[in-house]
Image: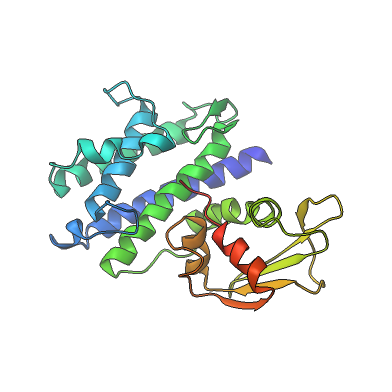
Length: 257
C-alpha cells in the first residue's frame, strides 16, 4: 500500500516538474522578470529555487548548506545574474537525473529522513511534498504570466492530500473552534467537514451535520490559502455561519512558510 502511494508521489513530482519546464518554453523574455506571489521572487527566481533544491537532493550542491525552510532564498540569490536559458537548461538536466534516480531504486523510499521543513518521514512520503512544492511554484509562475493550467492531475492530487490533511489542525488548533462546532469547506470538486469533539480534538466527519461555518471557494483559492499566497481577508470566499470562526479558520489555513 505504502509503495503504491510512494510511486504516485514520484509520478506527481515528475508531472509537475515536466509541466513547469514545458511552461518555460512559452515564456517571453519579459515574462522571466515578472513578480510572483512569493514576495521578492520573479518568475526566474521560481525556477532557480526548484533547480537548487533538486540539485541539493541529488548531492550536487557545492556550498555545503543544508536546504531548509529558513534559507529558501539561497539558490535564488545564487542564480540572480544567470540568464533564464542557462537556468532552464540546468533544470532540464537535473530533473532528468532526479527522475532516473527515483525510478531506478537508487533511493530507499522507506528510509525515514528529516525533511527540509523539519518533519521526519519516509522518503516516499517526502516525495509528495516535493510534488506539492514544485506544483505550487508552477502555479505561481502561471498566475504571474497569465497562463493558467495543470490545475488537476497527479501533482494537484498530491497537493490536495497535503492541504486537506491540515484542516483538522487549522480548525481545532489555529481557529480554536469549540466542542460541537463544525466547519465545512467546499470547492466545486471537493468537500470537507471537520467537527470538534468533546475532547476538543478536531476530526473529519461524514456529511450530515449542521455546520457552524460553511466556506465555499474555487480550488485555486483553496490552495492559494493553504500555500500562503493570499490572506483570508483578501480571498474570494463565500462565507455562511459564524463570521468570527470563519475569519479564524481562513486566517489559519496557510501551512507553508
